[in-house]
Amino acid sequence: MAALAVACAVGLIVDDRVLVGAPIWWKPFKFAVSFAVYGLTLAWMLSRQTTASRTARWAAHAVVVSGLTEMVIIAAQALRGRRSHFNVETPLDQLLFSIMGITIAVLWVATFVIAVILWRARLGDRATDWAIRLGLLIALAGLLLGGLMVGPTAEQQAAGDLGTVVGAHSVGVPDGGPAMPLTGWSATGGDLRIPHFLGMHALQAIPLFLYALEALAGRFTRLRDESVRLRLVQVAAGCVAALVALVTWQALRGEPLLQPDAATLGALGVLALATAAGTYTAVRRRPATTGDNALPLPLDKELT
Image: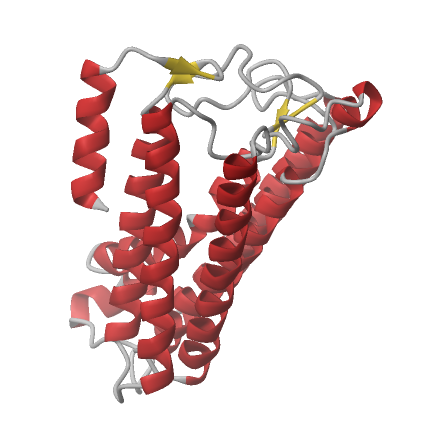
């Protein structure tokens, strides 16, 4: 995937074709990078098992095969100058889009199997266990949210335009309109790629959040307590899950991400307050300085 990302980056430079309002190699580039990060994250999580699992190994192979198949189709369609997603214009396009649907289903099931195996395993301390578990759980939900894009939109049904394109990223506006920089998300309507992206990348965000807590433990003694880190991980995961639900609701109403209405802002405010309250509750208890749940503290740190 890393090699393919480099090839797609070259394509962005030398190929000036545009498809659905974006450079034709932008989607393959984004998908290659995303799959590379996804694979590295799962590999790291599986490496934390104390006992190797044959089932997990085969599930990992399934992730690799399905991801490669998906990327071969996306890159091939870009090379042909054709849409990879939602394209049913010709029998070949329809076949390729159907295969992509199957490969993503296989990838989801394989990731689910890995999640079940890792949920039952001991991967580190309790904070680490739950960072991995909750990251996988939210990522699985984020993958499922991609299914909201593949059905015919209300506009397609009303126009009877089901012969060439079925499904869309955008809600309330056509795909390919004004877009946000870098992400390409719709700037004028809802975009279902936003919750899909946020949910999937909880896989990395939750463990990275825990790493940040551990890095700060040298300066903030309360973070040396495993139970404090665990509670903060749970608060962070709850915040991310709620944020995914919020942007899904926003997108389904056809609302641009950066143009929230009063209802969206109110929900975001409630989420911020709940997260702040959860964070305060998580850290208010004085950390233990003995036992298995705490790192040993110097005397001056204990007094402070």
